[in-house]
Image (cartoon, rainbow, N blue to C red; front, top):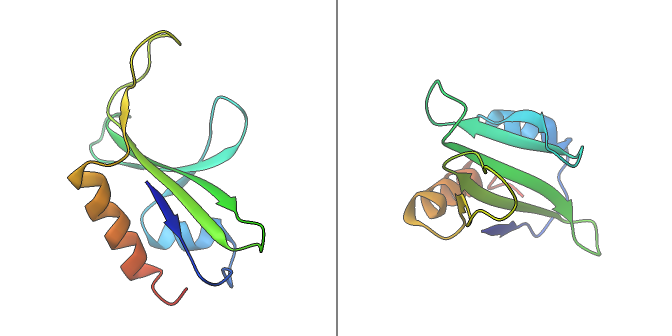
Length: 99
């Protein structure tokens, strides 16, 4: 699920996403992404990939990783449009609502 914002962030994403309970994480491609664990285990977890649109406005690509992918041929191991993801997106919007 993508979350779009009308204005640019006044602070760096790392600071703002920490306010939402997320920690920085390097993904397999070496990008800095953000995760929030739902239990003490590594999975399930919320995962955010930060990007910008053409005008520099933030886009948060949010999904729920419910287990670690075993290999590339495995069916999807994440959810993007479930009720849990939608509630988390609304929570993030409320916290970052000033944007």
